[in-house]
Length: 395
Ligand SMILES: Cc1cc2nc3c(=O)[nH]c(=O)nc-3n(C[C@H](O)[C@H](O)[C@H](O)COP(=O)(O)OP(=O)(O)OC[C@H]3O[C@@H](n4cnc5c(N)ncnc54)[C@H](O)[C@@H]3O)c2cc1C
Image: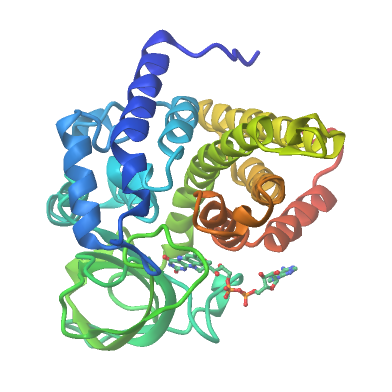
């Protein structure tokens, strides 16, 4: 049976994280270094030092890397607390894409790779990117991967173009997905490469203007222009990129859900306060049924999302791959939290679409969340294929 009680040490850490985010991080939400392209590196560095000083930096890392090694269910509780401010995960070094990349590298990087490319990210001194999506190539369907890495017997040469690459400017740890023909190292297929962002063959063409603004240094358009990499740059085995991406996928989907659940809960708390204090037609807004019902719908949705996340995390903690479960949860949570954020905007009236409160920003960021780590329709596509394939009973 699932036990919903939160262990005392997890509750204590959650309270510590929450206090840190409220006391030290929320005030940064109006800092001009939180730009249209996300927090810049200068702001990030300052936030990270604050978390380091409180002993909370990268709390989610494995114990062997100096973290607290929380289970997936523990993470659900802790990441939600971190997400109370959209800058909380940035400060604590549990934001995307670094958090998912650290998870992946801790599973498949060899010792030398971990030393150069993982440890500095865990320490908060270096950022990372995961470069897969392409204009005209890999997207919802990664099988359309167009970037090529050609092996000439000595080195690989990578050519291709990617976009929506979060955190590209200034990141040092680059995980690049490219297609490889069979060679002496392994069979043909999509392959992950690990290299330094300063390599001359990596050209950042521009940073895109997007509606979200909480990923450090925004989302880049990147060209690999004859990028030369030695065979030691292969991450894991040649031809296995999709298998490794799957490894990262279920936990990374869920940590996105956890962080945005925290942000949506914050939006709800602001909406509740507004509905308590703002009056219209002789009484507080919240006493009008139309507003009270929006707040009630939000409370129901938030709790449903929380329980669904905990359930999928529990599956992972039991050793399940959780691909189908995390797909269902991600599709549901992204849609529900978007509706929660939308109702919060509505409760606040005109101020809801302004930057006078964080609600407008949270709304825009959660809108983006419906697209990454699988658009809702792609998850439904996968779920429908699964239910058609597997006979009853399915669980
Ligand atoms: C904020 C943000 C950050 C991102 N960061 C990164 C990053 O760091 N690295 C990276 O590699 N990528 C990143 N991405 C890209 C992201 O992974 C892709 O946007 C996502 O995989 C969808 O691919 P696409 O944008 O090419 O959409 P497309 O593949 O063009 O799909 C467009 C739409 O078609 C519909 N659709 C597609 N397939 C199906 C189907 N089977 N059934 C029904 N409908 C379908 C969906 O509605 C989908 O939204 C990011 C995206 C966003 C929004």
